[in-house]
Amino acid sequence: MSTRTQPVERPRERLRVLEIRHAESEPPGAYGPALHAITETTTLRIWREPATVDPADFDAILVLGGAMGVGDADRIPWIADEIDLLRRARERGVPIWGVCLGAQMLAAALGGEVHTSDTPELGVRRVRLNEAGMADPVWGGAVTAPAPRDIDTVQWHFDTFTLPPGAALLASSDACVNQLFRVDNCYGVQFHLEAGGDLVRGWLSHPESRSAVADVLGESATDRFPIDAGAAESVTVPTAEAVMRRWLHDVVGKIGRAHV
Image (cartoon, rainbow, N blue to C red; front, side, top):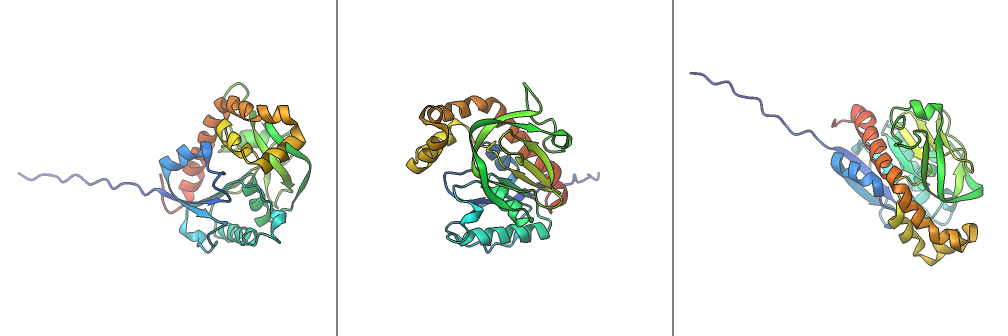
């Protein structure tokens, strides 16, 4: 009697993501669970490692935050190297997700201009999705109750940017219009959706960082900052995981060499 051999199901290849860090204190945070579940992540600590990687070796790039700015390129040589890396990635169609400084780096790489903001934006502040944001395949419907348009999230930036050519604006805040943008498969996220109370507390443990925040907010509001960030986690944590999973599954996975 013959037996029919069942086909062996081969495991799916995990997406390959390049994570660019600008400091150890700026990890993926609430984006981490989705990254760990779906991807094989390579971390480039760009302040001590050369930006010589080939973006074509990766399915996507995640660019995190940092205390420096695009305008510091004269004293920090790797800033120009990173912008060039992101530009090359874009030319090769590699999706990029930029967070705070990463959003500014992405904007610069795609033709936008980064400059000092008239008003620094610090603390937990509300970001509102516009109609394009609500219709976006990654962000639309990802925000949990109480308001599907609004996210109370951590802000910590002194710079802002103009939208790159062809960018769609997806969200704004009262203090800063350009909070979230998309160019094809790339997203620039000015706010720190990934940061909760513990991360903010760690950032404020550095005297220079705390002083810079206190100069803007005052001592009392600076003391409340990590408490407010912790309270916002009921919305920011599930939203961060939802948008990162959507981006990896529905954007990166559809165009990358690997599918999840």
